[in-house]
Image (cartoon, rainbow, N blue to C red; front, side):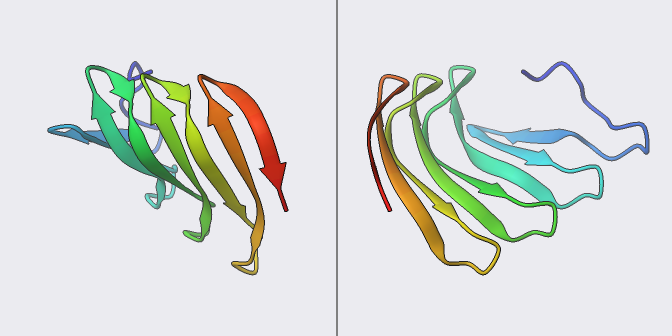
Amino acid sequence: MLEKKFYSNGQKVYDLDNDRLTYYYKNGKIKAEGPFINNMMDGEWKFYRESGQLWQVANFKNNMKHGLWVRYDRNGKEEYREIFENNKAKGRKK
């Protein structure tokens, strides 16, 4: 997951600061950020479009989708919510 450290233009692919991991796009904007505990995504993560706009808020437990995921459209309006349990979708609400 953390093999590639730099893009071809020299931009960092990620930063790991204590238990917080931040991924970047090639243009330097944040791609995703959240808790990274014991080398696993754990807790609430935020994912962004390359423009910097929030795309989705997601929850993980031991690197698996677990809990509420909310996706937003390009206008910032909520598209849908989905509940996951141990990486399996349990229900979607528009």
